[in-house]
Image 1 (tube, rainbow, N blue to C red):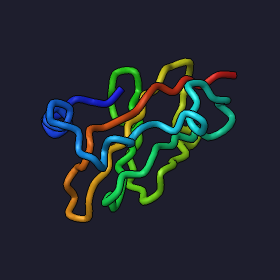
Image 2: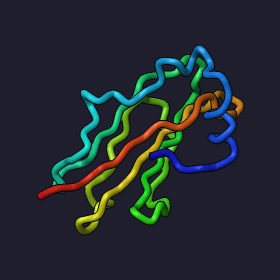
Image 3: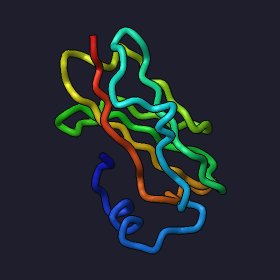
Image 4: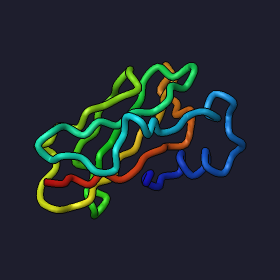
Amino acid sequence: MPTFDMVNAVLLTSPTREACAAFGIQYDQTALTFNRRENARVAWTAVSNAAAYRVSLYDEARSTIFATIVGETTTDFGNALFVGQARYFWEVRPFDGAGVQLCAAIGGMLIPIN
């Protein structure tokens, strides 16, 4: 459920770069639902030439409740971020060393249970 902005819109409507062709969610490490007493892990495939990834977590109103920059291809969202019976959305965007977004954002929904 990536958010809308002009950079993402241009990347979505442009031909996919070769480096972005395999960029996707690692579903074997990323669950739609998770135990709210534990952290929620999300994972994605690496993009060649990516120096870092911006990972964001949004509430149901699409307000940013957490954002970070990581060099790895996984992030754990702390369980304290998830309040109540809401649905949450996450996205990840790869950036090169100059800070240019390389691929359109990918992401999904997270639903805490228990």
